[in-house]
Structure formats: structure tokens, C-alpha cells
Length: 296
Image (cartoon, rainbow, N blue to C red):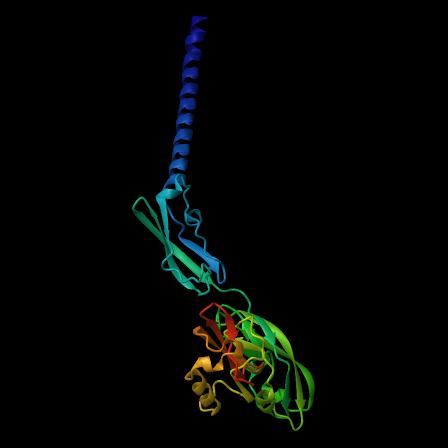
């Protein structure tokens, strides 16, 4: 019996040693895991889409777990944003400060969104030359400008015979994102797109965009629309005379004698992006918002 006892004792000691070693290894691994989980470390790269709102939550920038959020400070001063919205693509730097220690990472804003567009259906003259951009009414995108091209063929091909057709277009933003769409084109004899553009006095939009304009209270309106890129157009003289004048002379009769606190000039366009007039939105000293009038 005594021999059996001494023979089994080394086996028991070996098992105990293995068990203790295993426990020590597990505890060491747990220690390393916990230490790594709470060791200050920022993410190397964070990616946003243009138009996203940048996060001010510090945990979104860290790889470690946070014990006390008050020990951390987030620095986004390098990031271009407008009321928290990331409108400008590019690569920026963010920094997190923890108890005096600073670590930085990259914040990348990219644009992978296809442009949202509205299209003009056009009527042009036989063999009339025009630009593909005439088809584009608006392009809502963060990577402007947008360009327009025909999916196939040329303008000369499109206008070589009278008739109606559908035209496939590729609208591409400055980041290379594409929207494929179509427009209707009618080719007529004895017709001119340019004449149509200057005769169109229907309001399409203003710059800047406002929601409270009645679309009829102008300070300056034209009998013919004109291309804003035509800097030598004589119609600009009326604009310069207007902005150099005393705005109080254009106040509606019910506001005569009141003081103007601020003024905003609105350029009014037709659907071809030609100028058809100007409106002026003013704020009076008592906070009233109104539009100046030319007295007509």
C-alpha cells in the first residue's frame, strides 16, 4: 500500500503544476487583453461620405475603451465643416488628447454618390450648334462642377434632321461619379434655341435660393433674358446703377421712411440659366422682411 501511495504522488504533483501553469497563462492573457483594451490608442483612419455630419463622440475615434470620458479631448480644428456637415472632400487630421498625451489619425471625406440632376427638354433649330450642358437644369452634388456628355454620337448628328428623339446623357461630377439619364430633343426648321433662351422670362430659380419671394416683385426686370457670362452685355449697366443707388427709394409704400438694416440681392434665372432680373430682399430695423420694388 505504501509503494502505491508514493508512486501516485508524483503524478498528482505534475497535474497540479500543469493546472497552476495553465491558470497563470490564462490570467496573463486576460491581463494583456485588459491592458490593451484600456491603453490609449486612436484609430488610424476614419472615412466619411461628403454630406455626412462629423461625429463629436470621442469613442468613435478611439480603439481603446473609455473609463472616464472627461479625461479625453477631441480636436477637429483641421477638418473643414459647415455646422458639422462635411461638404468638402479631402484628407484631414483629427487629434485626441488624453491626460496631456496626443495621438492623431486621418479623417478622409470622399464623394462616391452619383449626382442628382434635373434635365431640360430642348427644342433647337436644324443644324443649330449648341452645348450638351444646355440639357442640364440642376446638378445637386458635393463635387461640383458637373459636366454633361452624350452617351453616343455628336450634336451635329442630333441636329442633322427635323424630328423628335430621346437623347442619352452622362452627367459626371468632379469626383468622377456618373448619372446616366435621358432628355427629349426636338429639331425644327426656322427655329433658334438662342432666341428661345432670351425670350424665356419664366422664373426657374434664384441665387441665392430663398423661399419667401413671390416671383414677381423685382427691382430690375428685363424684357429679354441674357447670358450672365456675357460681361459686355449692356444690361449689366442697369444692374450696376441699381446696386449703387439708395435702396430706400425702392421701399414699398407701406414702409416708406423706415430704415434698412440689411439687404440681399437675388439674381433671377430662367431654366436656361439666363438672367431675367434682380430682386432685393431687405430686413428693416424693426425686423420686418420685405422685397424692394421698382414701382411698377
